[in-house]
Image (cartoon, rainbow, N blue to C red):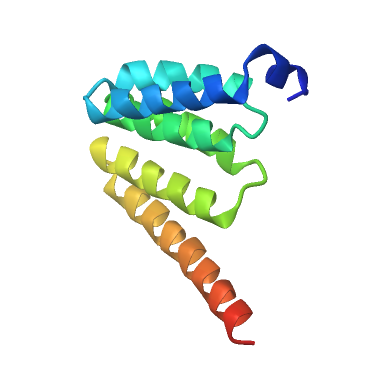
Length: 128
């Protein structure tokens, strides 16, 4: 996204909207959070946090197919391992909700592998 997003929506406003999305999630208004997070994803220069959280909000709102579709698109982009692991766990949850247990297990195992690799890299960095 261009630097114009920073001029249109100041960082403090984005932060306030992120807090509002969190409050929506805490008070079982996941559909509202998902809509707000979609807007934040379009406004934020680094929108991966909003997009990932939107996938979780979609699952919480019972929109599991939409969550799977969006998470799948995100997984095709360059992501930090921690974000990739969280998306895979969200996908596993969505699959469980849809009764697709084999697919859920595959996503859960993939998430474990990504997060375990991340931990091993961190350990190696601390203790070369």
